Image (cartoon, rainbow over all chains, first blue to last red):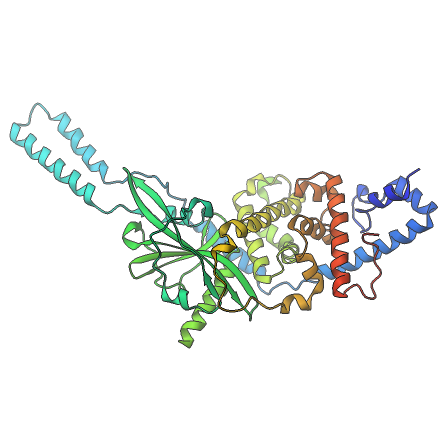
Length: 276
Length: 171
């Protein structure tokens, strides 16, 4: 015979009506309830409590246009190109290889003069390639921007923060960290990240995120937007972010809470711009 | 059915119920919408893994649960709170929560308790599905549920919300 304690433990899941057989009280519990008035009362009270909480919890207004916005976001995400390889080799080396191949095929027919000319050309091309600025694919920049915070070093060369971010009401900026990212052949570029927390009263919003930046000369292609407020939401996997160019820096604002939170922040920045 | 399930169909059938769950987990409409947006983005990427349309609700809840817990972890690891100076303005007020003591009580629960409680009360999934979605045995669902209900009851009693409401939670 089931005792009171066991019966109470076992009816925990069965106080709300469900459709499946196994979600109803077991025979043992039912038999105990029939024979124990105290447990019968306790079960009824539990059931009443659960039903009331269930009813109250279900009372959530659904935002207008929710399904349309979901479809739109899915459509936008589906149109994004496949992520580029972060360590893709620079394409400029290909031309050298072609020249070398041609040179090898006609080796016996060319004179010393031609060989010297080709060697000089190769040397010039190699020097020019070595001197050209190293650039990071923008997709790789996005991957770094949304990486685990622990991947950023505690040391930093500092950040060049946009004035709007340092003067935005409700904005608290943390200590900048940085991370060196390889762009091939032993070359690296420095990416800085500054954590932030922003809160507003109306609407009541609190969010945390990260402002990530790197020199515009070190990334390609550049984002189309030239301000935070005009930037459109992009996705890195399931993470939402926005990117823009400001002066000689490229910025990414990443908020793990997602697109709607970023839009809140953009609206606040836009309002502040109008005020000032 | 498998890959024949369309995202349109999933949105039509499950968007609203998922939104309710997401809202009760996060406590903010914007966060809830973001959470289900991310859920459907992941679902779109992994749609071929859905074998049976009848299991779609549990499958989507599993994705939502993973994203919710990841988001909770991200908020902690994104930045240590000690890295941040105090915000120049005050923290957000409690307007939302004061209007909804039940939501405030829910948000006071640990994430794992909140998850099991919300899935239990929404009645969308069977108990077996809840256990599968959360990746825990049925017995663990029961014990978490019992503790979660007891904590919820204490919070509601503390805020006076239980006045006039008979309760058996926690016995």
